[in-house]
Image (cartoon, rainbow, N blue to C red):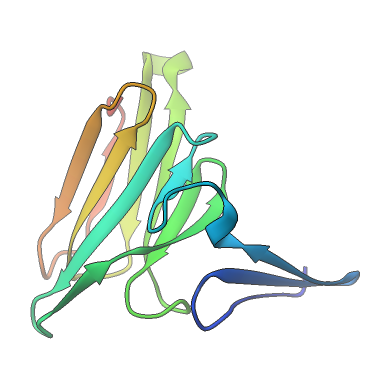
Length: 139
């Protein structure tokens, strides 16, 4: 792969390879709009944010990366703000694990839903904080 790029809306991811350019419609994943679905859709992740110093707020725009990993952008598709993954750690301690790392210090709330049973975990980041979370007993 020689290049990766998003369109201006963040809906399409383009990959340039030696065999040509390929496009992926990120909205066609079957996941609800504004959500990131991980582990074959078992977990749904959404993010809401508030830039207190700017007086603006919104929702994170998901960018799938792998079956268990993705990211979100808040202000523009070329500016990722949050990386997240939900790993199957049941073989180690009987739980699914939630990890995320911030690339932003705006206020945000990450909501992870286990779609198999409706269980929800919410993680909050206060304005001015660069957060990383490792919850190895999340679900």
